[in-house]
Amino acid sequence: MIEKTNKVAVVGSGLMGTGIAHAFASSGYPTLLIDTNPEALARAEKSIYDILDGGVVKGKMSETQAIEAKALLSTATDLAQTPADTSLLVETVSEKLNIKQKVVKAAESVLNADTIIATNTSALSVTEIASVLERPERVIGMHFFNPVHKMKLVELVLAIATNEETIAASRDWCEALGKTSILVNESPGLTTSRMSAMLGNEAMWMLQEGTASAEDIDIALRMGFNHPMGPLELGDLTGWDTRLSVLQYLHSTLGEKFRPCPLIIKMVAAGRYGRKTGHGVYQYDETGKRISGSGLKGSAL
Ligand SMILES: NC(=O)c1ccc[n+]([C@@H]2O[C@H](COP(=O)([O-])OP(=O)(O)OC[C@H]3O[C@@H](n4cnc5c(N)ncnc54)[C@H](O)[C@@H]3O)[C@@H](O)[C@H]2O)c1
Image (cartoon, rainbow, N blue to C red; front, side):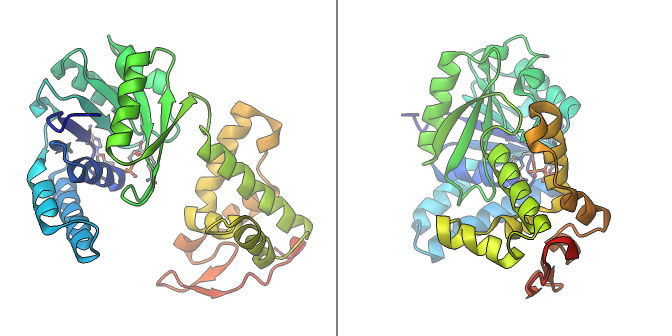
């Protein structure tokens, strides 16, 4: 149980920072959202207000709760403005090691010794991010999912120095947000990205070998296992370029079983990244709506 007086700071007000700040403020915690870019901050504040107002319209929260959440949210362009007695700081700035290390170091210099510093990194080493700090035992990975207000899971990533107190408090924080947390020892792809990469790669191997059509491979997972999306549809949504770089990283760190399917390499070389280029396994119009099936079988790609 985390008392509502505990303060939170979220550094980085992009896609994820917006969702994470919304989660804390709407759960009743004083939340300071920080970004060096004032335009990004203004955009984030507007998005958070929109999500809250939408929640009222949909009957998910009362108008009073939305007003309270808005009042709990504040913004700053300078991390040095973070109150020292902030209980938890979540960094969710751009996915670059040197930027993240700079942010956590600046955070450590303004925060009390018992503040937890969490990083929302998707793929960087939490141990390496924490390596520049004097108190790495207070650092943990808190991997949220997009869109944060809909996704229930948080992967808590344990770095080499993360201590038990930090793990216990982080679990309590996730519970306070209504999220389910799982513990993952720092490892490439954690649990979710690693399984998703394997599934998407295997689906592409089957498509390349002509085991089944793209549509049928997707139907197999949707109807057979109740997945909300098939692995090829999901790859089109995520982008095969992103998928390929994740697979290449997993291949280099975890070995042969993650060797990217040649069909993915061919599609990326052709610019068929998925929805964002209008063509992946399937084709899309400019609004992102699917306009045709793949019509592709095996080597036809
Ligand atoms: N996008 C996703 O689906 C997703 C999911 C899980 C985790 N993540 C991780 O979350 C993090 C953020 O991703 P995003 O998609 O929100 O990125 P984004 O590019 O939308 O936002 C990053 C924000 O960080 C700000 N920023 C950069 N340097 C800063 C600094 N020194 N101080 C303060 N603010 C700074 C930028 O101005 C920008 O607003 C990354 O580590 C990413 O890997 C992303």
